[in-house]
Image (cartoon, rainbow, N blue to C red; front, side, top):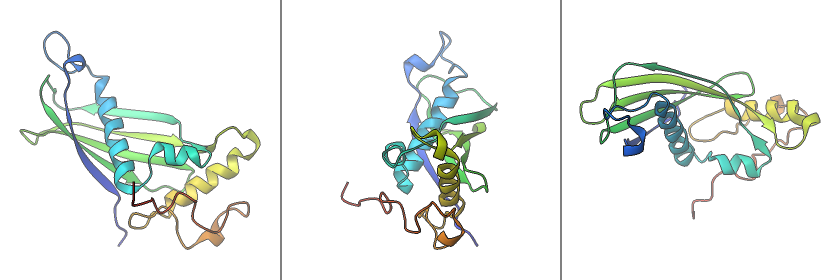
Length: 169
Protein backbone atom coordinates (compact mmCIF):
# COMPACT_ATOMS: atom_id res chain seq x y z
CA UNK A 1 0.00 0.00 0.00
CA UNK A 2 1.40 3.40 -0.99
CA UNK A 3 1.80 5.97 1.72
CA UNK A 4 -0.28 9.05 1.01
CA UNK A 5 1.51 12.37 1.20
CA UNK A 6 -0.56 15.01 2.95
CA UNK A 7 -0.37 17.74 5.53
CA UNK A 8 -2.65 19.88 7.67
CA UNK A 9 -2.19 23.44 8.80
CA UNK A 10 -4.37 26.02 10.51
CA UNK A 11 -4.81 29.59 9.30
CA UNK A 12 -6.48 32.53 11.04
CA UNK A 13 -8.93 34.46 8.85
CA UNK A 14 -7.53 37.98 8.82
CA UNK A 15 -9.46 41.27 8.82
CA UNK A 16 -8.33 42.23 5.31
CA UNK A 17 -9.76 38.96 3.90
CA UNK A 18 -13.36 39.79 4.85
CA UNK A 19 -15.92 42.07 3.23
CA UNK A 20 -17.86 44.73 5.22
CA UNK A 21 -20.24 42.00 6.45
CA UNK A 22 -17.32 40.01 7.87
CA UNK A 23 -17.58 37.24 5.25
CA UNK A 24 -14.40 36.03 3.57
CA UNK A 25 -14.12 37.12 -0.08
CA UNK A 26 -14.19 34.03 -2.33
CA UNK A 27 -10.73 34.65 -3.84
CA UNK A 28 -9.05 34.21 -0.48
CA UNK A 29 -9.99 30.53 -0.41
CA UNK A 30 -7.33 30.07 -3.11
CA UNK A 31 -4.84 31.80 -0.80
CA UNK A 32 -5.72 29.26 1.90
CA UNK A 33 -4.99 26.49 -0.62
CA UNK A 34 -1.60 28.10 -1.18
CA UNK A 35 -1.01 28.30 2.60
CA UNK A 36 -1.68 24.56 2.64
CA UNK A 37 0.71 23.92 -0.26
CA UNK A 38 3.48 25.83 1.53
CA UNK A 39 2.86 23.86 4.73
CA UNK A 40 3.00 20.66 2.66
CA UNK A 41 6.40 21.74 1.30
CA UNK A 42 7.68 22.41 4.81
CA UNK A 43 6.43 19.02 6.02
CA UNK A 44 7.81 16.99 3.12
CA UNK A 45 10.97 18.92 2.23
CA UNK A 46 9.66 20.25 -1.06
CA UNK A 47 9.59 24.01 -0.59
CA UNK A 48 9.31 26.31 -3.61
CA UNK A 49 12.80 27.73 -3.16
CA UNK A 50 14.32 24.24 -2.96
CA UNK A 51 12.82 23.39 -6.34
CA UNK A 52 13.78 26.80 -7.77
CA UNK A 53 17.40 26.48 -6.59
CA UNK A 54 17.62 23.25 -8.58
CA UNK A 55 16.59 25.15 -11.71
CA UNK A 56 12.93 24.16 -11.88
CA UNK A 57 9.69 26.09 -11.73
CA UNK A 58 6.18 24.78 -11.24
CA UNK A 59 3.73 27.40 -12.54
CA UNK A 60 0.09 26.95 -11.60
CA UNK A 61 -1.84 25.93 -14.71
CA UNK A 62 -5.22 25.20 -13.16
CA UNK A 63 -7.11 25.81 -9.94
CA UNK A 64 -10.62 24.86 -8.92
CA UNK A 65 -12.69 25.58 -5.79
CA UNK A 66 -16.10 24.36 -4.67
CA UNK A 67 -17.60 26.45 -1.87
CA UNK A 68 -19.69 24.68 0.79
CA UNK A 69 -19.95 27.18 3.69
CA UNK A 70 -18.79 30.72 4.40
CA UNK A 71 -15.85 31.65 6.56
CA UNK A 72 -15.94 34.83 8.63
CA UNK A 73 -13.38 37.23 10.04
CA UNK A 74 -11.75 35.67 13.12
CA UNK A 75 -12.52 32.06 12.14
CA UNK A 76 -9.70 29.56 12.03
CA UNK A 77 -9.54 27.39 8.94
CA UNK A 78 -7.84 23.99 8.81
CA UNK A 79 -6.28 23.36 5.40
CA UNK A 80 -5.78 19.73 4.45
CA UNK A 81 -3.44 19.33 1.47
CA UNK A 82 -3.00 16.05 -0.37
CA UNK A 83 -0.46 15.31 -3.12
CA UNK A 84 -1.94 13.40 -6.07
CA UNK A 85 0.66 11.29 -7.97
CA UNK A 86 0.33 11.40 -11.74
CA UNK A 87 2.23 10.15 -14.79
CA UNK A 88 2.62 13.61 -16.33
CA UNK A 89 5.27 16.18 -15.39
CA UNK A 90 2.92 17.87 -12.95
CA UNK A 91 2.45 18.40 -9.27
CA UNK A 92 -1.22 18.02 -8.43
CA UNK A 93 -2.79 18.75 -5.07
CA UNK A 94 -6.28 18.54 -3.62
CA UNK A 95 -7.46 20.66 -0.74
CA UNK A 96 -10.17 20.52 1.88
CA UNK A 97 -10.88 23.49 4.11
CA UNK A 98 -12.57 23.01 7.47
CA UNK A 99 -13.85 25.49 10.03
CA UNK A 100 -11.57 24.66 12.98
CA UNK A 101 -14.23 25.46 15.60
CA UNK A 102 -17.09 23.44 14.10
CA UNK A 103 -15.26 20.88 11.94
CA UNK A 104 -17.56 21.74 9.04
CA UNK A 105 -16.22 21.32 5.52
CA UNK A 106 -16.21 24.82 3.99
CA UNK A 107 -14.53 24.24 0.62
CA UNK A 108 -12.81 21.65 -1.56
CA UNK A 109 -10.57 22.17 -4.52
CA UNK A 110 -7.51 21.31 -6.48
CA UNK A 111 -4.48 22.81 -8.13
CA UNK A 112 -2.16 21.62 -10.85
CA UNK A 113 1.29 22.86 -11.74
CA UNK A 114 3.34 21.93 -14.79
CA UNK A 115 7.04 21.30 -14.29
CA UNK A 116 9.70 22.93 -16.39
CA UNK A 117 13.32 23.97 -16.28
CA UNK A 118 13.91 27.62 -15.42
CA UNK A 119 15.67 29.64 -18.12
CA UNK A 120 16.28 26.81 -20.60
CA UNK A 121 13.57 26.44 -23.19
CA UNK A 122 15.20 23.64 -25.18
CA UNK A 123 15.51 21.35 -22.17
CA UNK A 124 12.13 22.12 -20.61
CA UNK A 125 10.59 18.85 -21.79
CA UNK A 126 13.40 16.77 -20.26
CA UNK A 127 13.22 18.79 -17.04
CA UNK A 128 9.47 18.33 -16.91
CA UNK A 129 9.90 14.58 -17.37
CA UNK A 130 12.47 14.49 -14.57
CA UNK A 131 10.23 16.46 -12.23
CA UNK A 132 7.29 14.23 -13.13
CA UNK A 133 9.45 11.16 -12.50
CA UNK A 134 10.42 12.41 -9.05
CA UNK A 135 6.81 13.12 -8.23
CA UNK A 136 5.32 9.91 -9.61
CA UNK A 137 7.79 7.92 -7.49
CA UNK A 138 6.72 9.53 -4.22
CA UNK A 139 7.30 6.93 -1.51
CA UNK A 140 6.99 7.90 2.14
CA UNK A 141 8.41 11.42 2.28
CA UNK A 142 11.00 10.95 -0.48
CA UNK A 143 10.30 12.31 -3.95
CA UNK A 144 13.05 10.27 -5.57
CA UNK A 145 12.82 6.56 -6.23
CA UNK A 146 15.21 3.75 -6.87
CA UNK A 147 13.78 3.29 -10.36
CA UNK A 148 16.06 5.95 -11.88
CA UNK A 149 16.70 3.69 -14.85
CA UNK A 150 13.16 4.53 -16.01
CA UNK A 151 13.92 8.26 -16.08
CA UNK A 152 15.01 9.97 -19.30
CA UNK A 153 18.69 9.33 -20.13
CA UNK A 154 19.59 12.98 -19.52
CA UNK A 155 18.32 12.73 -15.93
CA UNK A 156 20.89 11.86 -13.31
CA UNK A 157 20.44 8.49 -11.60
CA UNK A 158 21.01 9.97 -8.15
CA UNK A 159 18.66 12.02 -6.00
CA UNK A 160 18.66 15.77 -6.53
CA UNK A 161 21.20 17.66 -4.42
CA UNK A 162 18.45 19.11 -2.24
CA UNK A 163 17.18 15.69 -1.19
CA UNK A 164 17.03 14.72 1.60
CA UNK A 165 16.41 18.08 3.22
CA UNK A 166 19.07 19.29 5.59
CA UNK A 167 17.71 18.49 9.04
CA UNK A 168 19.76 21.26 10.61
CA UNK A 169 17.59 24.02 9.11
